[in-house]
Image (cartoon, rainbow, N blue to C red; front, side, top):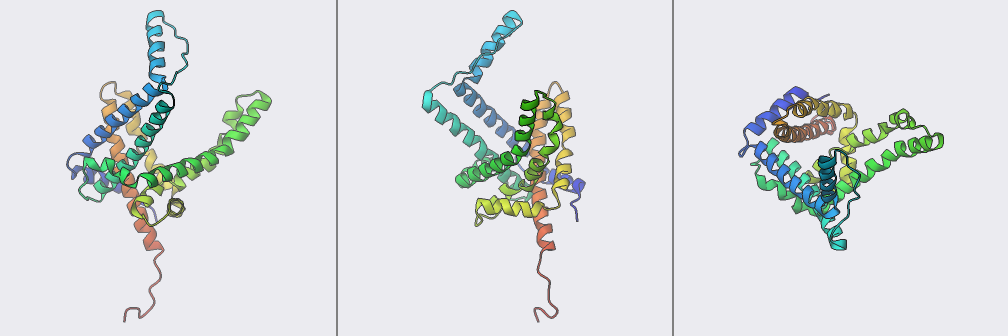
Length: 269
């Protein structure tokens, strides 16, 4: 049994249309906060200053030499950079909470963006676990591809070994719903949330891949629009997140129906 992609996306649009304030403005707010966090991070790690120097040199002379970023603030600056990165991660979980509330018509508000801080440690841990598992599966490509390229001196091995990325891609979709499970089932450990996501996605990875692929056209359109492309991407990001929330809900419902215990004759009498 598969989920009707078109109906799911239409339902997501309807849920967004019924939400006030518009999810578009909430997504724009998140983008502004994310950009501010990124600018602060780049200022602390020296990247912003290095880019400015290279840009000024390019404007003045038409060429630019690479400038090594110099972090500022020492240990305190490094700790503040890590804190900013963590804030960005927790906000991304808040965006998932917001999208779920939009989809479920539970009175979503801009304040939901900060609800991730209410599950701060679980939000960080589940994302660390997800990243670690994906990185470990990625080693199935990185190690042999790098080894072959180094031994032979032929960079084309990096391309020839691309099929080895398949296990990592499978893992990405196996654990794609872990954050949603973590939010819905607080009694489960983060490892159990990962396992539940894997169970939910068994036999449905291609389905989710195609669903996400259906948004690529919007991304290409945004890239081709010289003015307004960024604003279009703001809308697409919340549209995709609400659709993902709907996919999760329907996958859970479908899974529960498929795995319900059989009703014995005469039960309930």
